[in-house]
Amino acid sequence: MGYLLVNLLAGADTTAITIRAFFWYTLHSPSAYSKLEKEIMAAGIDNVASFSSARALPYLEACVREAMRMHPGVCMLLERYVPESGLKLPDGSFVPPGTAVGTNPYVAGRNKGVYGTDADTYRPERWLRNEGETREEYNKRMRLYNAADLTFGGGSRACIGRYLAELELYKIVATLINKYEISLMDPDAPWVVTGNWFPRQRGLNCCLKKRT
Image (cartoon, rainbow, N blue to C red; front, side, top):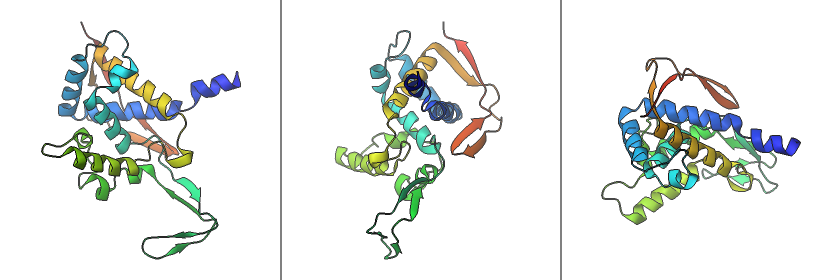
């Protein structure tokens, strides 16, 4: 029973946080939400969206990745300990062995040196290929983005539940938008975030109207 509970409950907070962030940012970006809605409605999703059909939608993926960049499920340091050899930084300074070091995923996601001067702006198009951008240039940019993306951690300590979380996220979002017209009850309502390892939010209240 204990093993089953781990499978069912692990990542529940972070996945719910990500879904709330997704709808908060997309619904507050009418042009992005309109474009996303058209893409999902044109996909011919029947009843519950399959993971493969949802993941095949490029603008949906762009919106999901942008929401996770803006509001990762974890907002505290992902700590590691410096090995016995120590750590020499690019500026020449030295971090001694045993020192706890880490990067905050929220800060990494807003790095203007990586994501551009508009890193504080929700813009899903940054994950798509720009007009006039070659495939090689796009792939190079995505490698930089992916290297800076700590939504699920990285390396040997990366989140083992990543693919389960993505499965839930893509299926839920695509199915909800396909089945319902979704709007904010109060677009001016405050977005209250409490950061205790998990950045939980309050203030996202939506109206769902079943599509006919």
